[in-house]
Length: 128
Image (cartoon, rainbow, N blue to C red):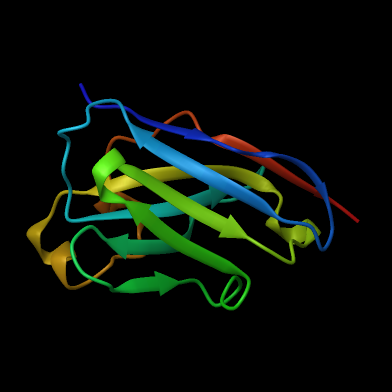
């Protein structure tokens, strides 16, 4: 079964930057879109950003617009999340998921139920 493996998390001071990566265990794995989600202790998993796998469409949560940038490398089947101007509220475990519904070709869902193949996540901690 395909696995999505997240990396790049760590401890950073407020205002700092991190770049997360998400690699599919099988290079031939394809999906219509991929997304980043995060989950803080005691909270539900929430949408952060998403990108279609073919095309240019992206989507961001209001809380990260202007600070985070999602991108992809199709050749290496890798998803990225560049996080700048980090805040303590960004502290969470970050996960990537894949959307296998054809509707994700043109609509990036913001609900975790629309994504599969979640990885183990990578911890991001932002200190004040």
